[in-house]
Image (tube, rainbow, N blue to C red; front, top):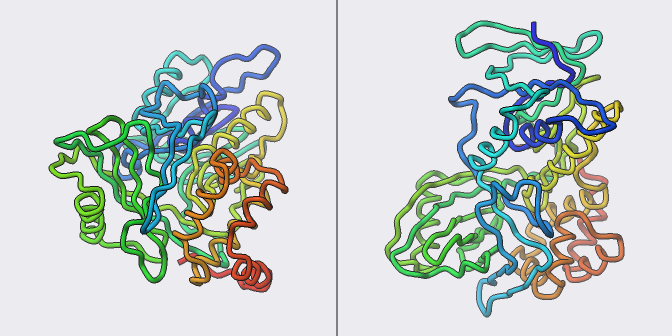
Length: 395
């Protein structure tokens, strides 16, 4: 039987971030023993993916950063682009394989964090802490006894919600035959894509050089597309909208992010907690997760080092989640024009304030200053009806 103070289940962004924060000795603080359980290579491990977020100044994971930008651009369906300088913030992109390599390098000489490759079968409550039952790659079974367990694996099903949309996307890492990209500017939302009747769509361009970029097609809608549907939409965006010309596809990525007002409980047992997307780190209205899980894991690591109960705090405030619930419901019911709303916000709100708003870092007065640019009637109607709506299983 293995034993540790802390069991971290899953070595994605949340699990690796928590292990990284608990690695090593901090003067005047506890040094818990940690076992990080990583799924063996195969279907349990997610494909490489991209995480984006914004922050000011140097960051904890800058060594894994693929690119960063201080200029953002949003394009309406017609008309001139909306551009903004977000200094002192930077919009940063990290690829998961770079992030994993950085954390692996830091954890390799660790005296208190051990990585174990195994498939977790069950997490059981037991006196003194949870028991994690797992299967090793050779088929042998083992038990890990811990004081605390943090589970970052995706939920099998989401809690009931009043509204549920899906953010789904398909992207290409491309290299073009000629210089077509502005390396200094990230194209955050390009609404020059065909707009569906039951949602919204946009393009997303993150250039890493004059001829290299991540180009994505994204939808907020109730249903995902077929593989051929994503390919057709992305080819249309790359060829007809961006006019990229001849290009080479270096790599691809596909993602699906639930956008829901379902409450995501952080506690899964007396000593078992959820972190990451499974613990509510995703901002429902945007799909951004990386910054939220950093707030979670920072708080958890501080509590463990101080000997306190390490219940992860909500990654987003009640006020932020309430505003998200109103927005999602209004979008889902077709009461507001999504492209018009986002373009209005980016054109009328100072970009740094809007990004802090999207990250849940604004105060009430700032929230009101942003909210006054949203359609008042539809949003008010939606806010009034929300408390009376039943929660239903997420589709």
